[in-house]
Image 1 (cartoon, rainbow, N blue to C red):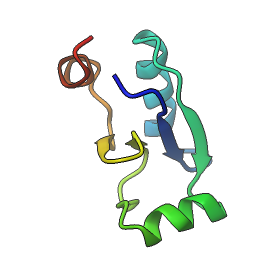
Image 2: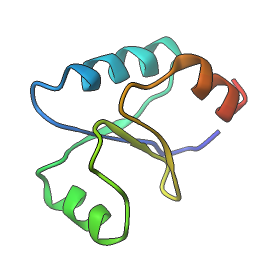
Image 3: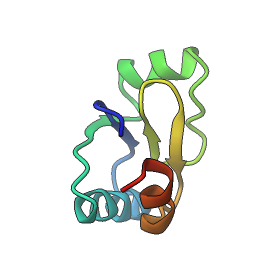
Image 4: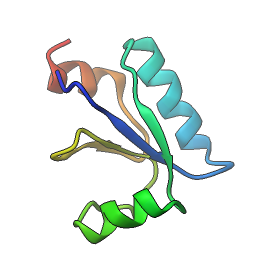
Length: 79
């Protein structure tokens, strides 16, 4: 399991709220980053796709984006 997760979000994003709920249900802490921030811009410049929010990033790869699936994350992360 990754030690550092970022959840890139936008204000008033209903899928972002759903993502927070899924991460909470899995007890996965993630630091939230606003898509308009300089940090998100730097991630986009590194090639992290930010077209479909939210984006869950582990520092190396996109784990999920859009409507996060608890079942898929459990499987992918071995939870």
